Amino acid sequence: MTIIANLTPFIQGDDLTFDLKFKDDRGDALNVVGDTLYLTLKKDINVEDSDADMQVVLNVVADGKAEYGLVEFKVNRVQSNIPAGHYQFDYQWVKNGSGGGEVTTEYRGIATVLQGVTKT
Image 1 (cartoon, rainbow, N blue to C red):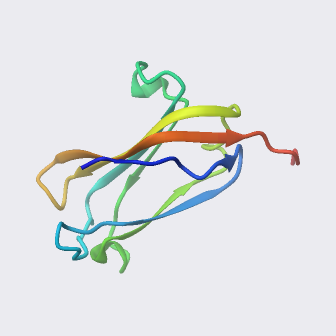
Image 2: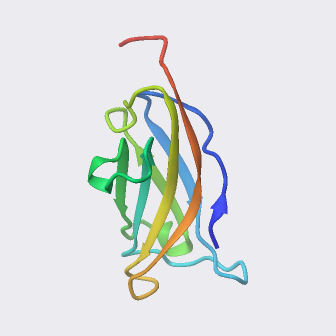
């Protein structure tokens, strides 16, 4: 099931961390080691992913947390340095390790990127 939600607005060019928790239908933690996560932002959802305004890919590795469904999804300042504005976004989960390659879109909504004031 896709959750429709908006990202908390963020400042262009900032380092970001999104704490994600993966659970099954019973609420038990899922081991997501070997899975791939995509965060994609686009002004025009019809463009190819290769032309996305921002796309960050995380290949989940064993780190003592991912085995229990906990993932820190990091976006660095270069990746988040896109023009201020409103974007369509989604988080996509490719279950390479946990589900035989099944692809699901976990979140979809609007992301607001704010212009930074300090220019360092």
